Each structure stands twice: as C-alpha cells, then as structure tokens.
Image (tube, rainbow, N blue to C red):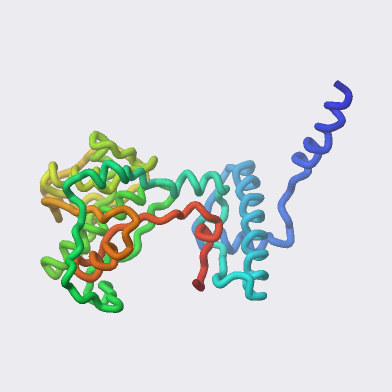
Length: 268
C-alpha cells in the first residue's frame, strides 16, 4: 500500500501544478480574438482549453522546424481547431459512415465511358460549378455538406445557376433514412431522402445551425431536387478521373483523422 502511494504522488503533483505558459498570453488572446473563442464565466474550461492549445502549438512548432530542415513538404499552423484534443477532432471529423459493399451492390455504380479522351486537367470552379467552402463548426455534418455540394454542382451544370442548398435540411430531416445529424451520416442516404422528398430547401431559407433539430422542410423554400445518382467504384481512381472530367464535381471522402491534416497550413 505504501509503495502504491509513493508511485501515485508524482502524478498527482504534476497534475496539480499544470499551468499555462505566461509567455504565450498575448498569442493566446490574439488567437481567441481571431477565431472568436469565448469562455466567459468558464474559468476551468478556459484553463483546460489553454493547455490543449499549448500542446497543439508545440506540435505545430516542432513540425515546422522539421519542415524548415526539409523533413516535411508542408507546414502546419494554428487554426480554430487548436483548442481541441485529438480525440475530440477524431470524433468530429469521423462523420462519413459509408457502406462500401452495400453501395457497390447497388444498381447505381458509375460506368466510365471507354472511348472518351480525357483532358489532363479540369477546374470546374472557373465555370461556376463549385460552391464556396462551408464551415461545419464542431458538428460532424460533413456528409450533409458533401451531399449539397454534389447537388449544387450538378444543378449549376444543368441550369447555369449556383444556388446554395441546405445541409441543415438534410441533418434535420433524413434521420429516418439512417443519418445521425452531428454524429455522422451517409451521402447516399441523404440523396435518397432528397429523391423521396422530391426536393431540398435552399440554404438561405433553411440556414445552417450546427446542431440537429426538428425537421422544418417547406416546399416554399425548395431550391433543388434529385432523381437519381451514381456511385463510383470503390478506390477506382480512373473512374474518378473520368467522372470529374465528364460529369462535373463529385463528392469524395478522405481520412482527416491526422494531426497534420487538422492543422495543415500549406505545401504538398
């Protein structure tokens, strides 16, 4: 028993004496101002977030020192995620819950044209088919943003008009299709909702709130619809290239559960 007490004591002391680095006070206040972070009347919460922020700052500075020596091809920087723990970011960014096997067995698989000469590059932004980057906040709603981005691009390609659609509409109204609001979802199931609902509201009519709420879809705010969709063969880069070149912007998922991705700033 005495040995156990002796072994535990340094850990307790270390935790009790954990305190912010006062030399970083100005940088902390500037970062809070830049990213509109407020911890009003939550002293303990701010102290915790400050320590998380300092840990991430040290990680970023170490990486950038190594990058300056040629050990990395990209740099990292403080952003609005900097007061989040790795576990919190993993939970927030692990929002796509796709089912590869189920999708591939569907009749929606994209079949690339074999006799089409593809361009070396294509940038659909220059033709107005890519909507502005959205901010999902601390909500795992990337699946909803990806879905509306796909629809917006295809509608703009057909009509020549870019109309922002509502990810909040999908978050609130497609739970019965198997989606889970801020806890993740499926692009295919979101599209199935739009098809069966015969429409989706505009983002202006049904603005984003970053929390799941009661379904408030209204035909008065309807700004888009979908009759069918196609799924790319899993992991097929040639099919992806063909689809981007011939069909327009597509929705893809990537692994964002890396600290280098959380704080990416620039480079390759």
